[in-house]
Length: 101
Image 1: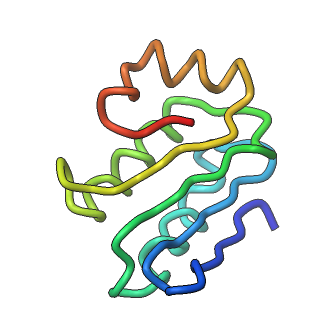
Image 2: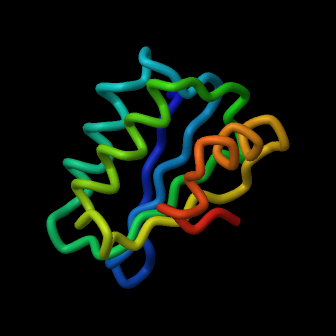
């Protein structure tokens, strides 16, 4: 499956792991991952260690997650980006909206 989720031990954080292409074809699965992840989640981690591609629709999906998580007060970490994905996030100024590791 291209998107997997798991909760932290305390249940407060939800990790969403993307595998392969992060594009419009994953839109519904990505949305389901955070909407059905639980109402008591206070933080999100988007793990891109196995993502091979990211396009503008993926950037839009990340913004939708940010809105869902509380907008400016959202606690979202994007981690394990390869160089190409990180470059796209940097060019898009996502470092101002998300914590990128």
